[in-house]
Image 1 (cartoon, rainbow, N blue to C red):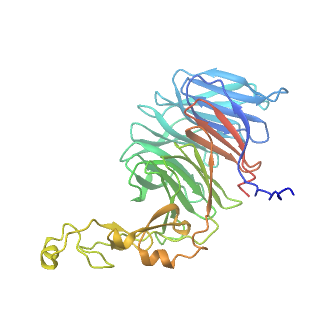
Image 2 (image 1 turned 45 degrees about the vertical axis):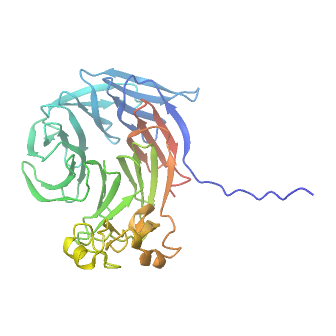
Amino acid sequence: MAAEIQPQPLTRKPILLQRVEGSQEVVNMAVIVPKEEGVISVSEDRTVRVWLKRDSGQYWPSIYHAMPSPCSCMSFNPETRRLSIGLDNGTISEFILSEDYNKMTAVKNYQAHQSRVTMVLFVLELEWVLSTGQDKQFSWHCSESGQRLGCYRTSAVASGLQFDVETRHVFIGDHSGQVTILKLEQENCTLLTSFRGHTGGVTALCWDPVQRVLFSGSSDHSVIMWDIGGRKGTAIELQGHNDKVRALSYAQHTRQLISCGGDGGIVVWNMDVERQETPEWLDSDSCQKCDQPFFWNFKQMWDSKKIGLRQHHCRKCGKAVCGKCSSKRSSIPLMGFEFEVRVCDSCHEAITDEERAPTATFHDSKHNIVHVHFDATRGWLLTSGTDKVIKLWDMTPVVS
């Protein structure tokens, strides 16, 4: 009698729709063209390309434009078809694309920075062009006149830039790990606050204007969600990558965060759950469970005639504990720990199966990602990697 075959559960994962190849160097940024089967890319090989899907099903360049310097970043506004391109020489070049995306017309150049432009944003509502550069300057220009309106010197090279139109707040993340919030006026700015939470540099920022939260990704492999609107200073840490986080995107309609890293991982986080802050690590000269002295506590070691132990910390309660009292590992997804981390024995017993239920899904893009763009209307994700390849993914199986 034949054995009964049990059906295997279906694994929900992104569907690879297309590979777009042809760039000679890394594609630093690219966007999906709304309402079109097309992609706009800028590359270290100095080219701007508009790729349109042909009858063959392949994407071929309808525009191939060579710039005078490597293209480091871009900003595209679909309503006006205005394309702003940041260059390695510090210039921002602006173009208008034709309706059929077969022609681009030069509009103006901004002498924005003394060195490589790291981020550029075009704000249609205010007719502003915001940018950061390797010269440690944040600047903003009037897109109508081309004139510089103001600038602000950052503490380190900026690698993340976001803007909230309603409040005119600009968020700048830099290589030192600091996030700076400025209030912009027409010709001046005010420093509102700056804060740190990462042990490495900030590599990406993403702003949700509805929930009023800011997400920051870092070279320390973590993502932090900062509750800006709540005004309580809440910061939620998310640990789900094995390499630096390179790009972030937020799906507002489903309240899911997409983070991508140098490890090739695409992580989709469910942010529609009640998450908890990670506790502050407590200081102690002895284990807060068994009172055994730590190795620097010479007095207690001498008095108790015991050998000092190495200090660890429980990721759930934050207490300082010895290895014997923290021999267990557990995931704590609601605290952002999707991987197993060290916890003290009593916390390990208290964590329920429900608390261990994953709040994120993990997927392999099979290339080291440097940039992403999410088209929420179609549920498509674009990833560009160090392999010079652009990949288009259907994310509807996992972003829903």
